[in-house]
Image (cartoon, rainbow, N blue to C red; front, side, top):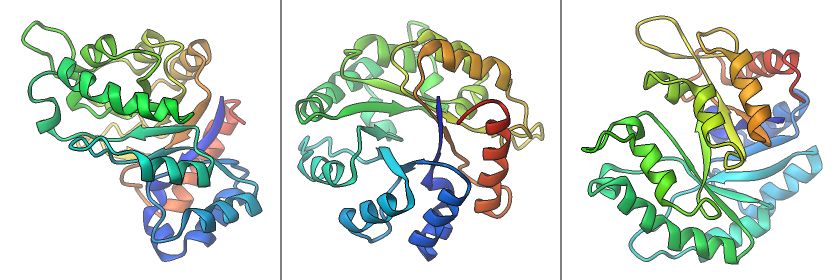
Length: 248
């Protein structure tokens, strides 16, 4: 499993100086980033920076147009940036109000268009997907059981699984072969359950990383929605922790 960082974690320094932030990332020894917007820069410009710094962006967090299903601009950006996978990072309640099975069926045509263009698609969870439906099933399970596994993959966020009171390692193992990306995000032991750097919280990383290996996860992506300190230094601390755990 290759180590990377979700640039949403570094959104403030990226907004100030995107290129310099990428330089810091490369200096940490990372070779992989996952984008969450390009901060007003063109895909061509950002791809040039990545290439020059020895970085690649195999995945991106993107929004989807559920009204039209239009994916042309996403495909153009993906080709310019070299993305392999586009990830839906969040969805509003209105999209799954009539059930996660219905949402899965709305996702499939969009995911199929992306697949026809040579791209993969994944869904990133928070905690609300673990609410139970009327029949007692977990929403996220309904989504993945309904959607074609060849079209809709999973990006499991370890923090949010833990936040929902479930076992991140078990969820990664449950969807083995369907989880190319995992977000490596730790949780404090304090009542606010805040984001903390890898290894400073309560998640069982021995079990999680073993599950990632068994499930065939390709990329472990460091992410903090709200870094507890300077974002670059928080990422650096997490990189050092996960590198000590054997991630490259």
